[in-house]
Amino acid sequence: MRLFCILLVVFSTPAFAGFKGAMVYKSDGRAQIVQPGIPGIAPITFDKVLYDTCGCWDAEANRFVVPEGARFVRLKAQAIFQHGDAPASRASVRQIVIKRNFETLNNWYEDRPGWAVGQVTTHVATTVDVNADGPVLPVKPGDTFIVDAFGWDGPESKPVEILGINGTWFSIEIVE
Image (cartoon, rainbow, N blue to C red):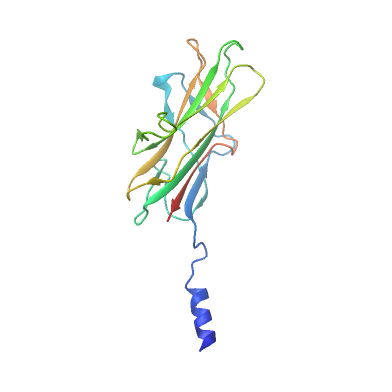
């Protein structure tokens, strides 16, 4: 009788119990051009799935979709931008924002709703890494999440690239 109870516990526990989530990334050679300024804000595209234990990734629409039964999520993203060509005397801005249902998340980062800002004032680096990391959020099944990108090097800005070197990624964790 004791052996039967032990086997029942072992076989009734899923292999990934305790973690549900997904992570996608932009692979080598998949750079994406971002036009400068507000009109150039665009969603970052991801072409590779590292894992998806929740069935959250919608590759066709390039977004995470909250599954049935999920009540809370934690989201993180990182984008690696090429360095700008602005003079060293002027700051360059690279930003990413995680949006829920195509809207910025209110009151995330002290009234900077979801924005993570990277600024470069000199040309000592070759890339700019920008991270967005937020608190656990209440969600409803069907809520969607995307990552938008923004770049600006001043009035004469040129388009910049988001590099596909496996450092540009987006993740979701279902928190229970």
